[in-house]
Image (cartoon, rainbow over all chains, first blue to last red; front, side, top):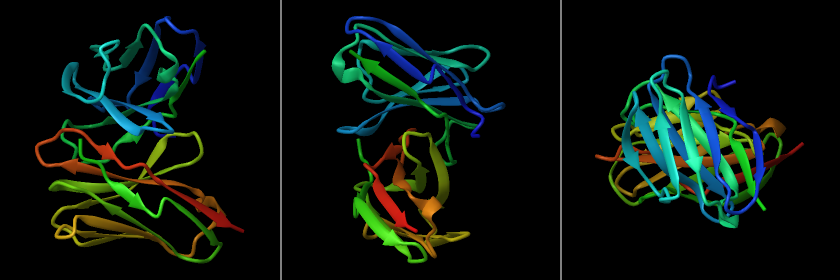
Length: 114
Length: 111
């Protein structure tokens, strides 16, 4: 158990809908990262938050947004969903901001858009 | 964005044999990390090697880093069926606050 909690584990929805994925980092970790994993694209970095502030953006679509709350949990919002958004979404956490340490990954949310 | 590229992408070996995977990257890095992912589950960190290190060991794992060739290798010695997983290298480029992952190596250890 990595200590990172992601909910829900599975999500099935229809095109055009909006969903929210939730992540609770390990106790004491201030950084939260979101990744998308699909067969064709592999693991793609989406966004990084540190102590409530956005620090880096990757290949995140404009239809996607995220935030980190004062209690450090984070939410990834996906709207106007398309079939191609079906993927495994991971969040990971680390203590500090800089990527000089390992990340702890949650078990992911499997999103299926039908 | 720069990513590691693992080679070979799929490997099938007998239990007890060694498994070697390679990773290449394109730009200067702070460090390189290896992660393991069991089918459909979260990634688990295995080892981190910094740019000023050449070799690192952790249990049955040995990682090398050659910054002149921009490549790294992961060796798993005396493999076990439980080592069956996908292995990813990830790089942290200088000045870039993100970890970029390669596409992964699938390793199957046959009992």
